[in-house]
Image (cartoon, rainbow, N blue to C red; front, side):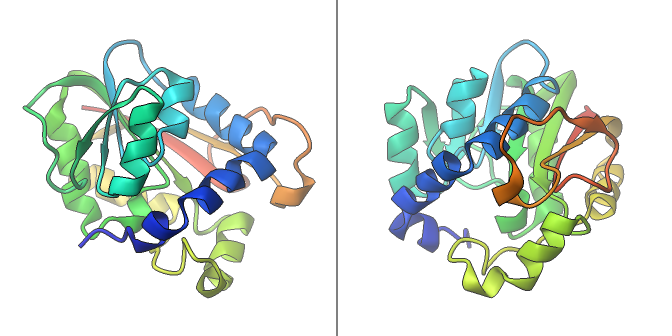
Amino acid sequence: MPRTRAFEMHRDQYEDWFVRNRFAFESELLAIRDALPKGRGVEIGVGTGLFAEKLGISDGVEPSAHMADLAAKRGIHVCRGVAEELPYHDASFDFALMVTTICFVDDPQRAIQEMRRVVRKGGLLVLAFVDRSSPLGVQYENFKEQNIFYRDATFYSVDDILKILKAAGLKVEHIRQTVFGPLDSIKDVQQYKEGYGEGGFVVITAMV
């Protein structure tokens, strides 16, 4: 069952995080943007459409009606649904993006398989998430009971995600990391680095 209650009830608070942490948000966008190929893409767990709008992605899937309404107002064509049962035909897209959604899905392995199904051969899956093993991930894990959005989350390390991708038969192309240091210390857009282990936000691209 999708974990949407907090997002339904606190949509404005969700949006406000990106305003208060503007430079962290822009750092994440930079790392994702450079990972995306050209072509038609879909964001799984599109939320309010903040990332999709900035990244020029026109399609999205979202289980929360309240969030989907705002994404639609941002010009995103939103289909209601969950990551484990995507409402698209096989090979419909050139790439599929998932941003901080993997920690909320019930079955990550099935979600990855579904993303693979809807992306054409040679296309890319792009997974962006908070790395549980990073300093930021450790902080989120330790205090998640106090966070209305993350208290129901299951955080994953990069190694966890790599195992899921390998089990799905996907070849990892790149791993990028960004958001270095505490969120309140980020006063400018950060350049991402290759690899993982330092940055709290990791972007993995894998080829179908």
